[in-house]
Structures are given as C-alpha cells and as structure tokens.
Length: 47
Image 1: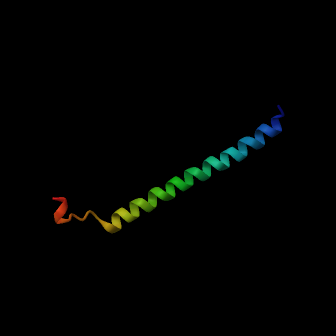
Image 2: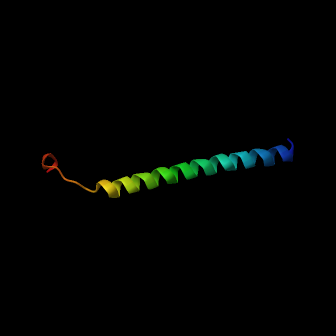
Image 3: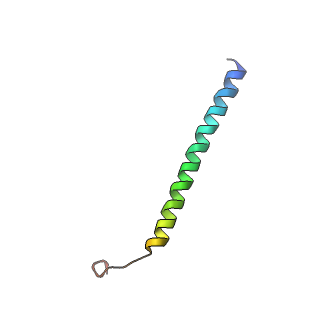
C-alpha cells in the first residue's frame, strides 16, 4: 500500500464528508427559516 495513495484517498474522502456536512447544514437552515416564516398556525380542526 502506497502512502501517497492513502493521502490522496483521505483528501478525497474528507472533501466528500465536508460536502455532506455542508448540505445537511444548508437543509437545516432552510427548514428553520421556513418554520419561522410560516409560523405555528392552529386551525380549528387541530384543536
């Protein structure tokens, strides 16, 4: 096993994990913003 290949693989894996983390944060932020925009409305049917 060549250490240069391992370093390259770790770099690619790190970029992939970072991309997944960023995507999750963006989705969480979008959900929070939409939750604040729409608010907590209560319909008569829900009571």
